[in-house]
Length: 250
Length: 265
Image (cartoon, rainbow over all chains, first blue to last red; front, side):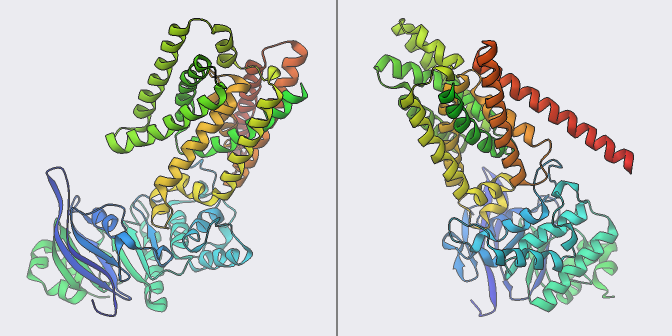
């Protein structure tokens, strides 16, 4: 494994009963990559992320996260995760923005994991980075989808992780909020060297923000840089009309 | 009366605090299911001539863990697993009562509760168990909160979700057994559910929800017991009705508050 490899997926397969979801998927993710993981509905993207994070056990293959095999992995404070539908929050759930972001600090705290004064500064810092510092005392259910997303990103980055996983974070969010959201991710990726793994169907962000692309449909049928993605005949055939949108950097 | 008030307070407050987690996890029915199991536990204790509180505690803790295992191993939905275990617990109770056929009066006290008749030994046992539940909940507060809000992300933060769920099930079992003495088997789940649901009408943060639930539980128990004492009403029914009225008032308060804020906009 190279020195700058953060995540290594080795020959991973997964299925429910006789249904195959993933077949012999192998690839690596390096430091400061901004990887878009894409593919049609039901292609296994979310399953793959859940396997990488140890939430599902593969039927075959191995996962190495920050150099450790996933079964033994303990450095959860170096991982940030925003799950799919994170913003489907019960509007009456009694949690303030501050309390949500504080959850992200648990992974580096020893038992009994009480919060101390320095933690408040970390919470304030994370909320500042996503432009939500004025919302600290608001109840999470009162915020818009875009604002909730920012809070969940703050929770994911409050520990200063090395890798951030986002599963379709802009589903159901208006175009303007999406643009601001991806600009914020780009900034975190470029200025803070944060490695980002993003599940998305939105090809329009490829040209502006990501530097690596992985295409999945049970098998991994493409993994490479954005330029390689655009010159790949398989991808050209797949994208057809959308090729211009995806492959011309603005 | 003083003894009843003290026991009622330190039993109902941990019940309400734990209830907030259960209600938000949509696990409120586990309280109802385990309450059915206590019937089997009490009957077993009475037939064995052993203190029913200890036998019931063992039976209900094992049942709570059994519900989790059944969900995990048989791939059942939570309410299905609760339905199976609670029915079996109740069935055990009915069989034992039928076999013994002689302790109907004792069992009646457990079914409907009578905190005014609580003896000093039971007060101490209840106190120690309630303190145990409260301290454990405080120590695991952050993990329980994360588990309640977003179990999947909790796992990716290194929270041991399965162990915590087992711990929460055990705490629920203990509070059910404690509450049985205050309001009886038939209404014990109300101590978990009603103050928690009432607090959620007005709380703006999780800590507020826990504090409000504890205050409402304390208020319902005190108010209910005082009314029951002076009006000679059954304490269990009075406490639960008092608690229900508080829920209704807070529900109306929330509705009015929402209407007022819409009018302001």
